[in-house]
Image 1 (cartoon, rainbow, N blue to C red):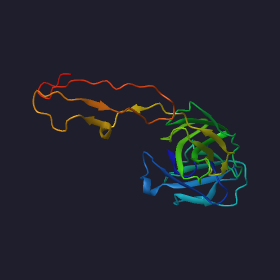
Image 2: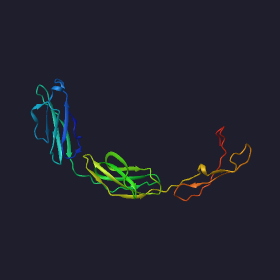
Image 3: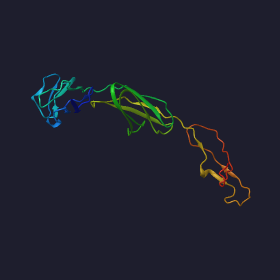
Image 4: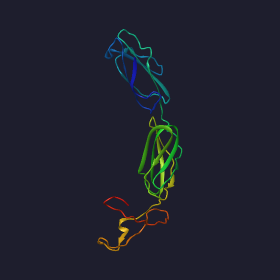
Length: 239
């Protein structure tokens, strides 16, 4: 039996340049280290003839198209593997096509970016403040044509811009157009410790005192809020 151990993925694609295949074999009579091999590219004829002991072969100058590599083992008795190992691959130098991304599910802290490509690609969402340089990114390593990525954390009620950089299996890249959006507004009211005041800094046991608090709006939306006070016992933990 013969197996391809390295080289392009069966059904995959690579950029123009050198392509290197490696292989191995096993036999029920001949030790692996004494097996010989023959290979061919695109049905161009088996070589070397006679079979040789090399277990790698480098190809260069392959046309930008589909190719088929085959390799077969030959044992000491001259018997040839009748089921050669086979790899179908392509040389690809065409950049993928990527549609402009769209933005949905926008909140004060995150947004969902979606986009499509005409062939399976990985993708990187790059985003930044609308008037800033791109310096934030999320990477999707899945090779697919339909993509989505949630980005964040964002600052609330803030303009942003985003774009997508994609790469196909061969490493050809494309960059999408830019999309802009504004993150959602934040509704957030809180009482900060510095806004609590006591009528008496250190009241004695049993002395009455007044506790007051200011409610601050820490968000972007006008709110109406009321501070509610609770009597809490440190001994029991009960309110």
